[in-house]
Amino acid sequence: MPRIKVVFFDAAGTLFHVKGSVGETYLRHAEKYGVKRTGAMLESLNAAFQRAFEDAPPPVFAVRDAAEIKRCERLWWFDLVHNVFYRVGMFEGFDEYFDEVFEAFSRPELWALYPETLGTLQTLKRQGIELGIVSNFDTRLFGLLRGLGLAELFDTVTISSLAQSAKPAPKIFQHALEEHAADPEESLHVGDSIREDVEGARAAGLTGIWVDRDGQSSSKPASPTIRSIPSLEPLPSLLTSL
Image (tube, rainbow, N blue to C red; front, top):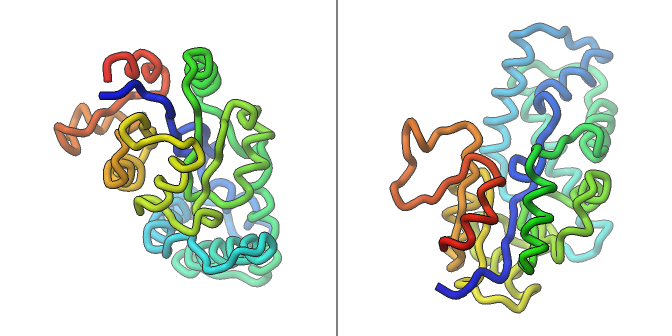
């Protein structure tokens, strides 16, 4: 196997995560609109978000203009959040609520790096590895990367709304490879989703690495051929064994 030249990463759930949970943020902003905070409501919101996110179409839009892309991203998220509260209970003032919660997720203070993220990326850079992001996140990602102190570590950032393709489709990975003038055989992709990150990368010819922070692979392996790591920390050493 050729030496690994480029390592691509998923973003949310791999490099950083929402503080608390998505449902917690939704509920905190919804309280002033009359939604009551209970343990059951928080649980319902998190479950409804998971279902709505899984049911949503890929965030890919047939537009090129930057302003139109952002408008489409916003509408995509409006439909998703509306779907969440349609499941758990709608309330008056939803449009204003959505404006607030959409803006909230663009703020770096709502997110946190995983403890090993920064050190792992810096080690890979010292090893001469090119770094990229391949994510289905929207254009708010660029501001988050700057706010979280990661932007300067990445050579490229490829997102679905700009690449007009979403993981697990091979096209978005091919777009990212072109940005590095790299072949699939000398690249790998790291992420927390077997379907989007591991299987998607493999379909495009890359090596896929599953970040299994919950330890699912030890109790019920998804496949004996899927290589998993419990965090990003082992990644620099793993590259030497590929």
